[in-house]
Length: 117
Image (cartoon, rainbow, N blue to C red):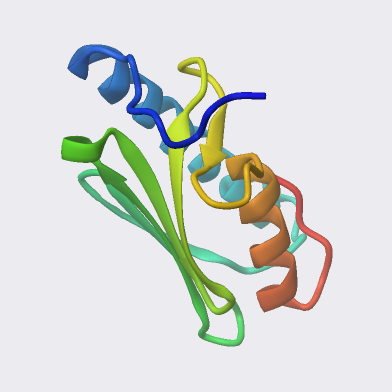
């Protein structure tokens, strides 16, 4: 099991690239949901932050935290901090859960339907 309390071993460049990949995956998933009429989610990106606004006006906010080399998620159920396990997978610093699993759970709860990133 990965020790989620140790700092990431990514260089700043690797971290930036990994975060860009995560944010692009989120945006691509939301775009495909809109195209396929799965759910009407508004996605707004500002630098290292993506705000997803669901039909009920609740939001999910995904935010890069470069000084800590983390990705933060704010949702109705709370705030989560994720660190890179290998540059590809992001693990919650408290629960050990994977980022996209937590994001999917939070999005599903807030949208009232099953959504999977």
